[in-house]
Amino acid sequence: MSGGVDSSVAAALLVEQGHRVIGATMKTFCYTDQNSSGKTCCGLDGIMDARRVAESLGVPHYVFDMEESFGRSVIDDFVSEYASGRTPNPCVRCNSNTKIPDLLHRARKLGCDAIATGHYARTVVTSHAAMPDDIRILRGLDPGKDQTYFLWGVPREVLPYLRFPVGDLTKPEVRDRARQLGLATAEKPESQEICFVPDGDYATFLGRRLGSEHTALRPGSMVTSDGEVVGEHGGYARYTVGQRKGLGGGRGRALYVLGVHPSSNEVIVGSHDELFRDDVTIGDLNWLTQPPHVGERVSVQVRHRAPAVDAVVEHIDALELTLRLPKPQRAITPGQSGVIYRSEELVGGGRIR
Image 1 (cartoon, rainbow, N blue to C red):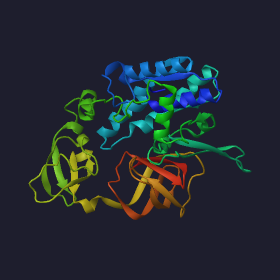
Image 2: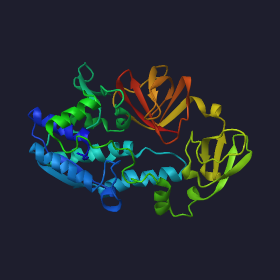
Image 3: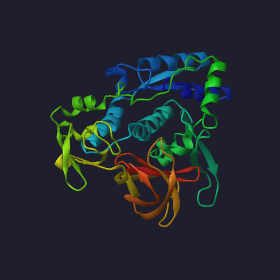
Image 4: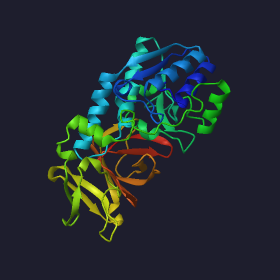
């Protein structure tokens, strides 16, 4: 229970269904070192809201100290990725390494049979000879709130113990249920920022972690793909593929970030047309069901807010997957997630290389 409306309603639905429920909130970095914000899922207000909801539902509530594992798995990775010139997705990392696996570990110690979250996703059980009880994750019923993009890294062995009570509801329906139940979180706004960077100023956060003299935050050359120097950047960690803001003007043409080269401290810029690619390579793979095979047509989602698009598997091994995109896609960004689907089913994914 993050203290948001989705996990609050998830708990309420489980109580209605007759389950014995325990509410659990993770204490992470942001509870101790950052001021809370109404735009994040974290902060002392989140703990208190989760506790109020648990009390109103008549269920016990625990706060688990996950600061060490969260710092190691999520924050350190976030800093390392930016220092290496990539743009990470810490919410994916949190679900994959801290929130869901660690929560299941704690739940088992309390004698629980399963864990549930407020993600907009669904699970189904399919039976066949090879896998008689094969658990699969499907997109949430509400296409505008589907959160399966953030779940590709969850360990496959967790799936039989994972529940998504709000996955069959739309966001307005969740709000309505919360109001009907009189839950304290019914009107709480959506979480929008990275929980441990509640003010959105991740460059300052990186400066505290890396030191202001780190190469990632020092000025360097802004060059075109042809090698022409067209300006100076303020530290490559401040730039991500597709970015236009912050590149300066006065050149008579619009420039966009095409990539960064940490080894030479260069930010590569170019035209809007140069942002499009017809292939994508994905590493750090994790499969939640049968992996795709060469020649298979799947769909891939390369950004949270982007629709999944058609793709054909060109290469796959234990380390990498390469997809051909019949329709070129804009601003495919190293470090972000490339998530694979078969229709509504979440197949798995990895990090874009």
